[in-house]
Every structure is written in C-alpha cells, then in structure tokens.
Image (cartoon, rainbow, N blue to C red; front, side, top):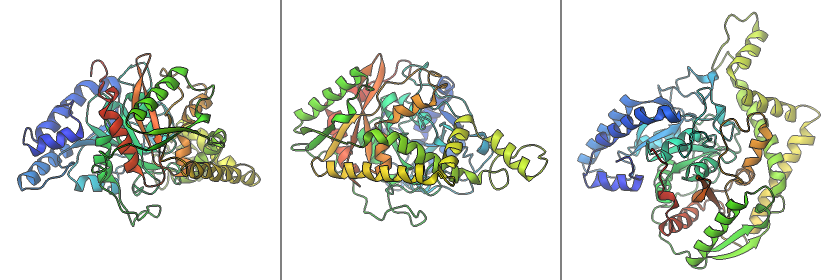
Length: 483
C-alpha cells in the first residue's frame, strides 16, 4: 500500500479495496519503523490520524466521494494545527500549540485528508538543506549522507521514502522545488496569492507561498485542488477562480512554445545536469512542443536582491518572538533588556540570527535606499524580464538546481555557497510566478529535477506539461533503495 500514489489511493478507496483506517495504520507503522533513519517528522499525530481515517471511511460509507477523502498526508511544521505543536523547526516555538488551524489545514481536513503528522524543516524556513532545524538535520532517502534540500526537506524526504503519498510544503525562494529535485519528486509553487497564507507562520511575507509535494504531477494536481482558493482572512490572497487541475492534465502539448533561457547554462551549472535538461527538452519536442532560446538578462542580480528582501522581511516578521508575546523565554532574566536579548539569542539558531541581522541592517536608516530599495527595483526588472519572455513562449524550462544534493555539513561553513544553489528558483518568488520541478534523471545516483515556469495562475499548464512528460518517462517511478 505504501507504494500507491494519491490518485491510486483515491481509486482504491472508491473501489473498497482497502479502508482509510487500514491504510493509515500501515503508513503509521512504516513511519515508526523507517523515520528514525531520516528524521523527517517533528510530530506524529496517530490519534488524530486514526480518528480522521474512521470519519473518512464513514463519509464514504454514506455515499460521499472525493480524491482526498481518506487520503493520508502530512503538513510542514509551519502550518498552524489546532492543539498540535507548530514549531517551525525552532527552539523558539518548541512548546507552541496553535489555537487554530491554518486555512490550508482546515481546507484539506474538510476535504477528508488524514493528517499523519508535522514534518521537519529548516528553522523558520531559512535554509536550502534542512540542516538548520532545532530537531536535527533531515537525511535524503536516496543517500543518507546527503541533504534532502530545504526548507521543506522533511516533507520531501517522507514522500520520497514512501512514508506517505504527499505532503504540504512552502516555497519562499525554492523550498518546494529544490527539495523535490533532490529527492525525485514533483513539487509545485503556485502563483503568489493562489494558496492562503493565513495560519502559515511567515518568513518573508511577499515571497512565501504554500504548495504540494508529491511523486507525480497528477498527485500535485489533486493536493493543489484541495489547497487553492480565495481566503478573505488573508489580505494577500487573490480572488481568482480555481480551475479543475485534474481535468486539464491530458491536454495535448502540440504547438506548446517552450523557452530555454541562455542565462541558465552558465559556468555554475553541472554539465551533467545540463545534459539531462536538454534530454527533457527533446522528450517534450517529441510530444509536439516547439522550443526556442530566450533571455532573462537580469537573472544575475536575482540572488543579491533576494538575500536583501527576504532577510529584511524576516527581521520584521520575527520581531514578535521576543520572550514576551510568543515563544521561548529565557530563565531568570535580570531586566527587560536581558529578557529580550537572551530569549532571542537562545531561541533562534545561527542561520535565523544571521538573516535577522542582515535584514535589520538593510532596513536601517542610511542603508534602506542603498540596499532594500535597490533590491525592490531589481525585483521589478526580474518580473519585467519574465513578462517579456511570456509574450514569446508559453512555458520556460531549465534546471531546478545547479548541482545535485550535497553531503550533510558540506556547506555549513560557507552559507553563501548554499545561497547560490537557489539561483534558478528564487526568480519565480521575486516575480510571484508559479513554478514546478519534476524528476528528470540522476547524477551519481542522486536525483535531478527540471523546472517549469508559467505566467500567473497557469498552474494547470505546468501540471499538464509535467503529466504528459511523466506519461512518457519513468524517472518519477524510481524508488530509493531500502524504502
């Protein structure tokens, strides 16, 4: 049962081949057996899962149906879940139990999804390797000595190891797509505003977006269908109709215009990944797509701009965690200043402290114009590049990451080296565009992903291209040894 995709689970439940309760018990036992190797979960919710599974079975017995009714999933541990620890991978929130459900959690629960637990993540979603978590690093099931990517590494490792069929994740600069690439999954970052951010603990409010991580484009379509939609509680949510993503999966790619940016193939890209990207291009050509070279001239400025904007927003968002209002409080403070300093110094890990300091500096008097304002201008140039490109092409294709997953600890002493791994993913967040990573091969036994980008609210187009590609390739069906 653990090898079933979300779509196969939906069919199996509908055909009464097994019950949600039976499936949930199988997966909970599998997590207990295998997750100690991976460290992909922070909290398990066995009692809630079994209660939800029984309720889903009862709803099916009463004639209800639905692709997510009785389907087991997990949530990245920054989605608030009522009465359950929501830690954000941080000591600061180690004892925080949310008093309400995030909109995404509530929508999926209403659709009948079964929550198995909360997955490990980089602390406050800050990282590209899932090594900054207070609960320890997550390991990549394809090679336990390598990182699974971050910050949604727990969700990615759990799905890749077949501990569950799909999970929620978030993407601020590539945190869905990069772990998907590193673990042989399909991961989708929707258009900014497509999925509610209400109840999703913020890192950088103008960049964060929730989305699905699963093994196939079809499964991502099913999970996104349950997550997407306007939310009046979220001021950044956009009131745009949600199409039937599954209905659009089988459209022909005949005449689809794919753009391949020349800037993607620079000296920083592993040539073996470049070869796999071009192999995927050839595969899509066979399906009728037309490919042309395009240019994104301001891409080179994206990383510096992102690493000013995101830390600036983080320094503002994380100011609430001060030992008074939320989170960890130090022991026996001498005075209010000591309370603030020690609570934040002890509660936040080094990567979070580094980004708060960078952000506070960029926003400070005298530096705001030189750094933050300039970064926002670059952001507009990046967006304009994409708008010009989408006048010529329907989809942009390229590598998800410049290299395969690196070894645990390999970049700990050089944070900038880890930041550079986000070079292909952050532009979608700066522009607010939807992006998808899909499996495209292996380098040294480690998975490699290809990224697709589309105009605003064209998630369906991305899912359609990925689904057609997956019908004609088998990379996404490969399973890590031992899982």
